[in-house]
Length: 155
Ligand SMILES: CC(C)(COP(=O)(O)OP(=O)(O)OC[C@H]1O[C@@H](n2cnc3c(N)ncnc32)[C@H](O)[C@@H]1OP(=O)(O)O)[C@@H](O)C(=O)NCCC(=O)NCCS
Picture (cartoon, rainbow, N blue to C red):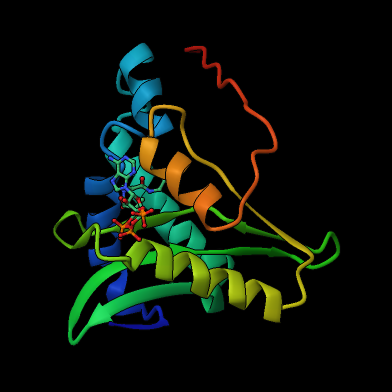
């Protein structure tokens, strides 16, 4: 497995892996379950859009794990230089490629990148109904810093 910088041609596959991976654990899906489809777009459309936003916001901080031509998964990062804060907004591994250390390797790669960029700390978040994140992140060295409740209201 190699980890490389994302290329614009990766986007359709990154969107697919994202939608597949976040089924059942996406905040946008929870909102849709409560309020119905909003503004003519379902949660999959909203979630896939996060990938585009990440690639636009920090194109040199989105990394893709590959085996030959096959994309195994990806991780995105954001940088707030003034605050010294790195963030990992999205991480997903193709369901057929999980459990082989790809997710852990992507986190390690992103953390090294953020350290090289001079960040003082890095944050990542997970939903309470996502047991993998709650196991994986502490085991990569993250400590729990708080829990947040998301509310939504239809207008
Ligand atoms: C989270 C995700 C990226 C992990 O990718 P992965 O390549 O399978 O991760 P790894 O193989 O590096 O293994 C990660 C750890 O999760 C553990 N794990 C796997 N399934 C698990 C489960 N159902 N419950 C708890 N832990 C689980 C593995 O045992 C491993 O821990 P270990 O190394 O201590 O044994 C992948 O599961 C995924 O894409 N999930 C859907 C999207 C998602 O949840 N993204 C993160 C949102 S916060």
